[in-house]
Image 1 (tube, rainbow, N blue to C red):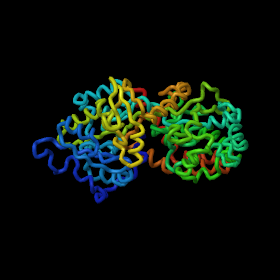
Image 2: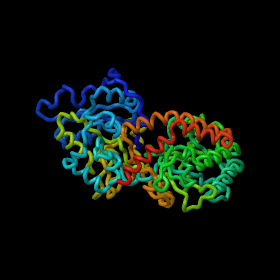
Image 3: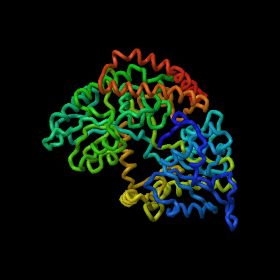
Image 4: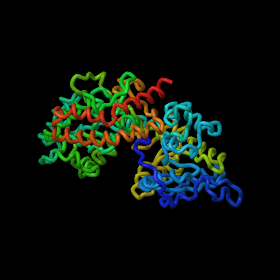
Length: 532
């Protein structure tokens, strides 16, 4: 559940021909009521391919009945929406409600197109309660003037961790009589043992001591190998913080760029050492994500991977999951355990929750629908499927999920729930049987100490810090040039070395491309959001 701002938005072009299925939108001349007088509310849903048609979901039918309205569902895949989004905005026609389609930054670029939902909270008591219990969620989509052009959503406390963890093959450690590494030197020694001592026992030198994914060309992903920056005391925010994703961090209230930091250089040199020793595949920089995943899943019987970053044991290792455990990130040389940190972002919230058209024909019905979606009843079903189908209410604020059935349906591309729910599962709710969230929650607990080693405001740029449209444009323009240099140089240095000879020139080049201007912009907005 990631936040994307205008930093990753391209130029807006009015390609109206792409709109196709999105014609019946708020503000159009389409009928606004049914023949029997019920208000019509159009709802655009951006979804993953494995999702069943919403019209087939019983909870969606019940929602329509409770709303006493006619919901016109408009479904679009993530890939299609990526092509259609800019044209939709430029055309000025959006659905009454759009789910996981727009971010707050989009509203800043198109004033008057989106409803300011901060003025409507009294008509959405479930949302008000959500904000009372989760104030950081409200900050996530509220601008400095108090406007809220999209509601955040929450899928519950089980997802409050970063969503990325460092895993090691504990079976291999035990076989070789090794301990979980706590420093970079210890990690290197463990990886050497994984490479040379046949820990999977098949008599072949097929082990991959450490498996990392390639760098993206445009930003630092939540699975980036640069998660090792946390070993040095720099807390990343690769899952939610736009600042961190583009190379910035905070230390004692001061915003800096890690792309030109000594710590970044230290991480690159360490990776180069591991790669040059054959402890990380030489083709890491060009290897596809599918190939990385294949190496981690192996044949389902004999493990090939020793260490990697991932979401959970289930997701990363499949039938081999019991061999792996999450571990705190090992400390870099000269960094004590109490200064070693972990990524500070969260998987719980989504800033691209429901956005409402300022021209919605039936505003009261639209707000009533949203309030229902944020109820416990419909939040649980949006995420896990309909009651009596894949989830059952088994007690007060307690629900049991038929995980096997959910997995089976997803494999058949008929998932009975939304890919990105528009709701809120309160902390008092207990979900039983959801193996995925249980594994994620348990993995995240390993990092509680390291996540307590930094101040979540002074030493981290909070996920809710979001520059305005003008500054986002400047940030994006500068960063497009900066990232082209930084990502290419980083990958080259990791694979081939040479960083000491080129470092000073590299830092000067990034400054010449606007790096310090971007630092000042992020500092400005960091101060606005954290010191008001």
